[in-house]
Length: 112
Length: 114
Image (tube, rainbow over all chains, first blue to last red):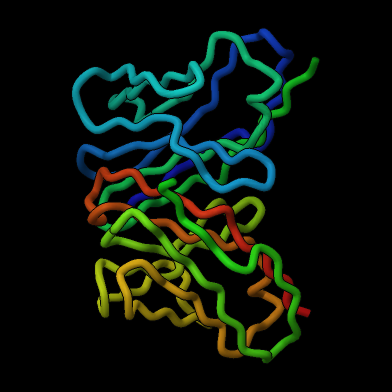
């Protein structure tokens, strides 16, 4: 069965600082990996996704993520965080068809 | 505008009173799905549908029903709601339900069952 672990429940960073959100997945074959963002009171919006090829994936809003098969990780990064990035971030894996499995989420707080 | 809509956005009800949460998409997507979001648990899939009249259980289907009579609509039915169904519910859709497809989410329905 596929699964996703986001070890950090809550992260606080200062505006302008760099950010890394961790994601570890479990799946027997090559996974399809996603990062979604949920702003307060909003639905989920796709930031980026990885299928194959280049292991560094660029997304919207200046985010990127790196797939590391040896570590079963797909960490999300941003070089300089903006106050508007405060939100909850979800990593997800699509292994079996028709099903997306989400991690428990990481809440990001941005300090002025 | 391409979107997934849900109604109502907020709902307070009492135990045992049947309710329906509607979901509609205007992107001609074949695949639709319902999730519930609970603190510390992320999103868990309730039911999904690959096309009209084709539905299947997700990870947490107990206490829920769905139907797919039209391609654009995928209502979630709670025939006898209980307090443990208090949650935030999301509907999502994608083109065909393929493994790597992006799912588009509605704005969510916050349900409180007293």
